[in-house]
Amino acid sequence: MLELFHNDMSVCAQKVRHLLAEKELQWESRHMSLRHKEQFSPQYLALNPNGVVPTLVHDGRPVIESTIICEYLEDAFGETSFRPADSVDRARMRLWTKQLDDTIHAATVVVTVGIGIRHQYAEIHTQEEIDEILDSVPNPKWRVLKRQLIESGMNHPDLAGALLRLQQMLDDMEGALPMGGWLVGDAISIADIGLLPYVLRLDHLNFGDLIEQRPNLADWYGRITARDAFKEAYLNQWLNEKYVRDLQEKGAEARDMVLRCLAA
Ligand SMILES: N[C@@H](CCC(=O)N[C@@H](CS)C(=O)NCC(=O)O)C(=O)O
Image (cartoon, rainbow, N blue to C red):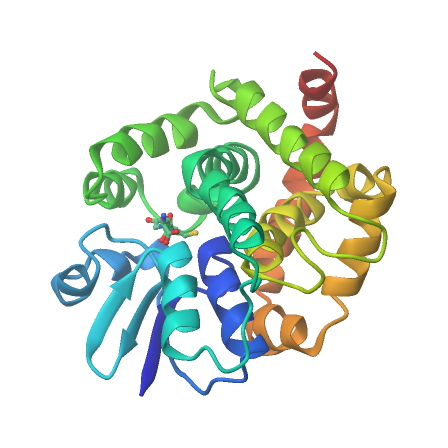
């Protein structure tokens, strides 16, 4: 049996739900409210000591880290494969997913929290509760960064660099994508599935025009979001409309500052 501990709008969880849907695997949902500290409960930390989602539990055995979970699903359920057969293409696929883990995810957290959702904390919590949530973050680097982002928002010194990193991601994808094709090889792979939530996040923040300006990327985005697996993994029961509205509203408010940063 497959269980997925996840959150509706978590980029890392969206990626894993997408691969599960593409592979047509059945799984049990264990949805976690990140705003209510469910990821820091002792039971969950026993599965995932980093206190983040997603965690896949396969027949009672946990697997953590979304990129590793995707590779695990390929190893364990490889009948329909989302890894290219060619070894060099497979290495190129991993270069994309490595970038997610090295820099793109971190840049997305900075942009999402700094611009989009920092106010959500104050909406539902007192300052004392916010302090308690932040003090519970197991990773000391993230503990400090998250507090700074919630406190300083768009004035955070990492914001401009994070925006430029995401712009670079869009440029790299535009350069790599053949019109009508995929990031690596001739079929959709874990590279496309991994990058999608990060592109979608920019769209949710009202920066869809950055996608539209890049024709190969825009074509890819249209095709991948038209897939049944996208609807199953991202929409249907998993689209949190309030979260998306918050991202859209705050992204629009930040637009001038963002465009200034990107032009720098
Ligand atoms: N490298 C991890 C990152 C996981 C991660 O940062 N997850 C976020 C959601 S996208 C999370 O659970 N955050 C917990 C929090 O906000 O306290 C992975 O790829 O699984």
